[in-house]
Image (cartoon, rainbow, N blue to C red; front, side, top):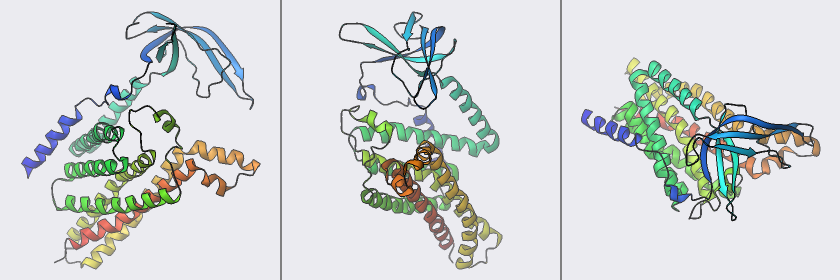
Length: 368
């Protein structure tokens, strides 16, 4: 058994260290992107909007930090009549991403795309890893391996298969089960408790799967309400199934929460039985179910607040437009909000049912 666990651990570490990237030939583009640093602010202009707010445009001098133009100075003309909503304000010393494009006449135009944020993200990631290892110790280490493996499966299996034209829903279901199976066996060991957890997750995902298909069809969600979908159209050599991609998001979103609640419930059954081995299956289920109800309320609130937080701009639009006669029914009817509502409710139902499923399976596994 220990040998099997070592083999699984080796496979995960090996795969986690592979480069996480999708083949570049899937996304050919005429633009060249590189990093640069702002060395001078040539001109700054503040402009008003119709709603009374203002935005700032800048002409910048930059120095390329990499690529064919490394150490060369670049002039960016950012002051124009066009109002860009997501425009940034840059200071001397800021590092930014630059897109350079060459037109038919051979003239190169530079565009400042965004800040370079990776340095601080890496620092935060190091702090995160340190806290996980400090608090979780060896179990925290195994959790980090599970996290890296999850990222690997998503980037190296799920996304490339979707881009290759396979059904996103089926691919995400297979990938989700693979992720959870590895996470559970790695963190909990290859034992009866882990087997019950995998079985509980499988039943819960099947329920989530069926509900996702039914209500995505009934509400006629296309998967094109997200802004990112417009950038994906034509970006790949194969047509992307956006409705399937939406369903894939439902499944992957649910898998993360299922792991927590299923393993927690099985552990509750184990602990109660250890404290009183003479309990009947019915009493064991009842006591563990009571524990699960408390945990379940927090999980559902977490799911709702997570999705609500991601949808705050949409909710703000609803509040602002109430004065124009926009009703709650009309707001929910828009595809962008309907998508989040269906995602939240389907995921919540799957999570709620996972609790009694895991409790029941764990309880009867001890039946004498």
